Length: 348
Ligand SMILES: [Zn+2]
Image (cartoon, rainbow, N blue to C red; front, side):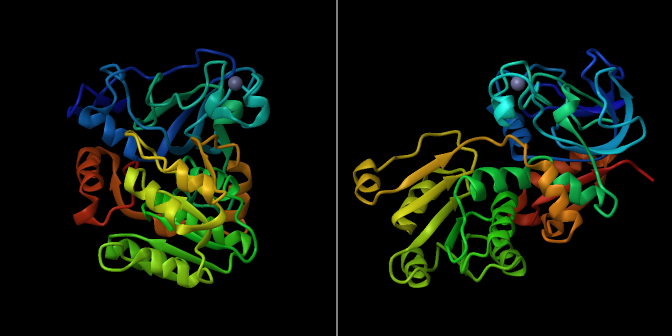
């Protein structure tokens, strides 16, 4: 089969590799119909993952058909259309029993494209398929399901649920890349009074409006504190969801919330940020953070199937997978290309 192989920083190639097969009774092998590229793969390509071995197939999100199943996997059958989650847990360790698959002690977690070969391939072996593979209901498209592999669960679990969005809340979303926009869409499920999105890119601000933001603010031209305070009765937001993954965005999120408010950090941070504990303490703030577990995928699939949640706007570019190297360039140059998520499909 063919797959996208990581050959060290800055070097990827779409090449012929051996096909995967079932290695444990809890495995599934999935024939990939659609996959996508994430920020973490770009970061690895830029040298940000020194532990990543050369020869590793990248990718951790996919939709496809079950090609082969281990004997212990009973919830899907060969031929079923399935979503491959970015996280799979053993299901029995202390953390998996709490739904915290990202912290799995049994060899699961965010393993695809990292410690095992990933989804940017014609076939992928999914370990712990019991939690890593989900039947896609009729009426949910491949692209919609693909957005639920990582992006939307991260926004929903780490932003909206951990941040406890409640009816009547003023919610500020800082950063409207794919995860920020998904946080906006998922916040609306809980009837906030207003959602304001803080974003530098005009394209992304427009998309945020399209997805139902009540206000958008350009931090380079407007006084963000003033704008959010005005919406929040002069006090600020009840909750700020930080979805940019940079220190300045976290520090801004802390400033935007009212006394007694919450800050939910969903952005992926790779560098330290300043924690102004002297102000956070004085304002009675609660800060939550974490990586995605994807234990919300069954719920999110149902929300998309029943048309309560619309994630279609997250897909901006489409390629056939033989064009994957061009797709990486488009995704990496998001400022110019306007890319949010790029979808790669099998030709024909
Ligand atoms: Zn586990």
